[in-house]
Image 1 (tube, rainbow, N blue to C red):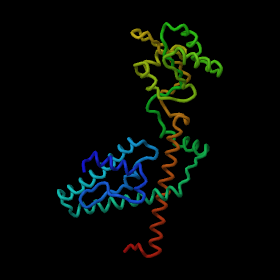
Image 2 (tube, rainbow, N blue to C red):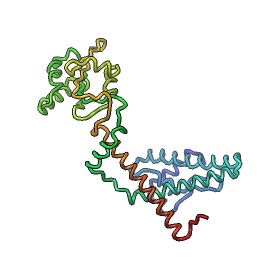
Image 3 (cartoon, rainbow, N blue to C red):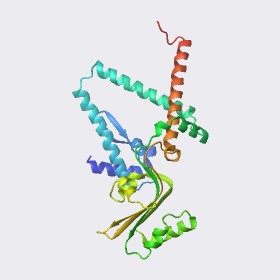
Image 4 (cartoon, helix red, strand yellow):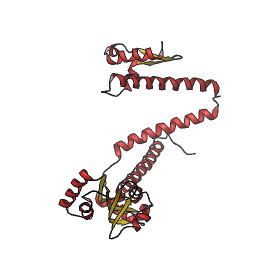
Length: 277
């Protein structure tokens, strides 16, 4: 059957309910068959008929490609003891990994208290050294001739919620871009890219924490107000909190797996299934 005709047939079966009663073969490679139920299982719920055809086509072609490659490889590659050993080791590693993941799903406690988080951070500060500067800042991109230029610049340093809401409202109407990262740390390199320069050059332009960089060709001005900056040293906890959490969880996982392996060895020895001569 022509490939396009096959996909149309598959679509007709997918959008009907007949496949529930008759799990038809939709493709074959050699003696292996692909059934409609397998295709259906790989099509997300709620997609359109057109998208269903796309998903069906991709899955059928992927399924066929895998089996064709397998057939050609078996004919071309000599399966010797080395390959058999590699396959055996891969199967063992996969089974072990799946068992470990099931075990971690059951046994791992993902909850980390603030106290534990702080304690780990303080005890391992050297692990969280900054590789680049970070800042808390407010950024504004405006046209030089805007009548609200001075109004917005004067409010770049405000810590008043009311003033900030006013700045945000005016910026939405008159600015090209505006973002406020005054309450959370951000990568200083990301900020510097807004100005087309490295961070040290941008930071050196700041006067009283405010830097105004004109773009004469476009008539723009890009403005930043620095609330805080850490150029080097240990990252503050509120910047690296997710990394600290992941580090703690990784340590818990390693300890659980170590205990699992030890308990399995001891159980096997007790049952005389593992004997060292």
